[in-house]
Length: 63
Image (tube, helix red, strand yellow):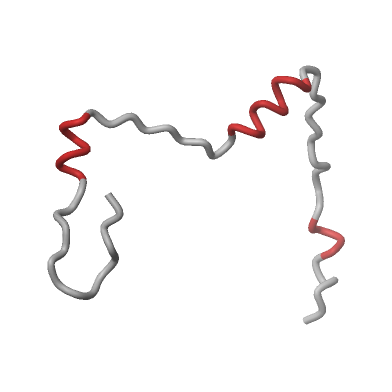
């Protein structure tokens, strides 16, 4: 079927547009989107890391 078959029924509602009034806050939120900061205590960090490998293979431990 052609891609224009449902074209008359496809867009019934117009897409809402949000008016931005505070551009400084908007730009800051865009730059921080997806930014995740995780704080670990020293005890958790010690348990998190794997022991150093003594054999060949696998990923090297950089810590």
